[in-house]
Amino acid sequence: MANQKVNIGIDGIQRSADLDRQVSYNIAQIFEGPTGKEVLRYLRSVTIEMVNGPNVSTEELRHIEGQRYIVGLIEQRIAHSHRSKNK
Image (cartoon, rainbow, N blue to C red; front, side, top):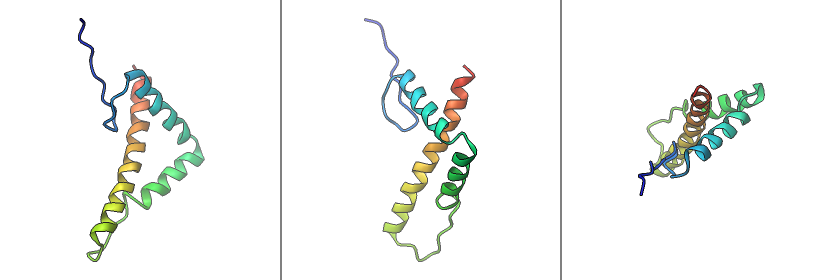
């Protein structure tokens, strides 16, 4: 029996390498145009670039970190799509 390489995607989910590239490509297509870039810039500004004060609660912080994770994942998927095109 041949050893098959297990592919774990950027999001930590196991799927075939082809399907993982397709997910990245689809996400990149959504944010490729000028409107998509503006939307991503907005999402980044209200999540990753947002600074919270010392009075933020644990619950709020968890919520914010979840939002940041999703925006970061979108950005990683876009970068993965660009890297995959060059192969």
